[in-house]
Amino acid sequence: MEYMTTKEIARYLHLNEKKVYAMVADGQLPASRISGKWLFPRELVDRWIEQNTIYPGSGIIDSILEDMLIMQGSDDWLLSRVTQDFTRKNNIPVVTATVGSMAGLKAVSSGKAHMAGCHIASDQARELSAGSGKGCYMMDLFSRRQGLIFDRSRHPGITGLQSVEDLGLCFAERQQLSGTFQLVRRLFDDLGVPDPSRETAGESRTMGPCSSHMEVALAVRTGRADAGVGIQVAADLCGLDFIPLHTEPYRIAIPTQFFSRPHMVGFLDFILGELKSVSASGAAGYEFDDLGRIDVPKTIEKEEISNA
Image (cartoon, rainbow, N blue to C red):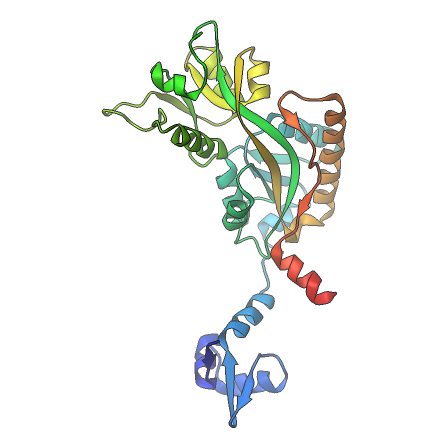
């Protein structure tokens, strides 16, 4: 463990040495007295700084929470539907922006949203939302199937992603900060072929970017694209064919400072109740086995352990 002298810790904390001694005397700073000198363990000091950091709670985004909710992130048809129902029945606006999982998590991290919908790995989600105070709760809503959306009557030779490459088809592409864009890249990489968005001989066989799964399906339906990857319900609603490729969890990331606020609690209770009703009747391409499961931030886990 690295130790700092009184002069070093004063410079590190931008304080004078007299103030450092006063804080030590009051038991405010972690310190050890060795051979008559005070030494300060760097790791414990950094931890003390983190524990005593006050995160913005009275800024614009916090005050907006009293009147409305702001949700950015991944597009999902079912979540959009229950969110609209919440606004209609409770007269509390929920402003949404389908900017993609990664962009939504970055918005939460920078204090531009109260929550973010995402369908990327938990570790990556935590890393992207790391700036949001003491972390985010991750609440599971459902799992959903993503797959290849196409019109078999126009392209009977499509059997999977490999066909898109083999037939030289035009592909409907999502925005680069979406989880689906990442998924498509990974699926094509697994096949060992370049996805259509990667230029070959100076040309790219793509259209877009599309900001939602429905936009992908509509592009295929209207003939502006031959195929694209999206959720099953988008294909069903547009009367298109669907080949499943991947099942993924979909969750909402909520910063700890907003999680217990009345509007947020009301919103979460409402959508969980609505999704429970949907699960009873069934929804194409959705599964609800982990509905309402909460992944607690590591900072909260440490506090719970220390308080036990």
